[in-house]
Amino acid sequence: MLIGLVAALLACVGYGVASVLQAYAARRSAAVAAARGAGGQLTDTGAPTVASTVAAVLTVWFIVGSVLDVVGFAGNAVSARLIPLFLSQTIMSANLIITAVLGIFVLGIRLHLRDWVAICAVILALAALGAAAGHEGGGSDNPVMHWGVLIASVVLFGVSQLVVRRLGSRGAVAAGLAAGMLFGALAIAVRIVQGIDPLHVTTLLADPAAWTIAIAGIGGFYLHTVALQLGSVNGATAALVVGETVIPGIIGVLVLGDTSRPGLGWLAGLGFVLAIGGAVAVAVFGNVSQLEHADADA
Image 1 (cartoon, rainbow, N blue to C red):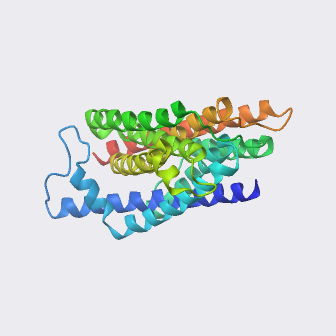
Image 2: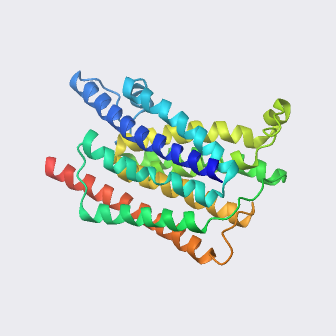
């Protein structure tokens, strides 16, 4: 349990700092492209093109953020195997707090009282979940589960591409939510993948859950980058938090046997709902602030 908690906290810090650095890199990349009059940066609806996303990814600060994402992924993988998914994923949702606070200094983001209230709600929720969490369940040998998480990830990535391109400049929250759901699928796949303990390479490569880890990881990374290009880093990250927390938490309890401490199921449920509510509030407030700043600039 202790190792799983430390790993989740490491993932939280890695993901939180990475989001801010990647948002900074995306903004600088867009500014440089605009300064030199480069075309082909946006689609007709205002969504970033693949070329502009690749240009942002290749900047130094984005690469540094990507290294921290790898650290976060490692912590995520370890925690998903050792503690209940509703706890590991919600601890990682605290990267929202790191993103919001660090964004003040790096991105010049101004937080209102409403933002701080929502952030404090997430902190209280994490404390409740930590107190209520019991033992993690096991994996699953059901091939329907293994193939299902792979097919769902592929379909989600394809549909999200169409939705984000249609929404264009208004698609930050949608892209962040889709990225979070893919990262949530990744967490489920990490829990159920076979051939890890003990290590058996042939079994690992033959498991659809292993392919889910690769597809969901790459797809989630790309969509999160698009979300950071489109809108508020706090809004995009909060939407991601909702996506990567809700589904794994529910699947962990209903299918994989994750439990709370005896008599504290109500506290775990309250903490889970409060964490999601706080993250949704930060997403909404972040988007409102983004629109307010855009109107002021106009």
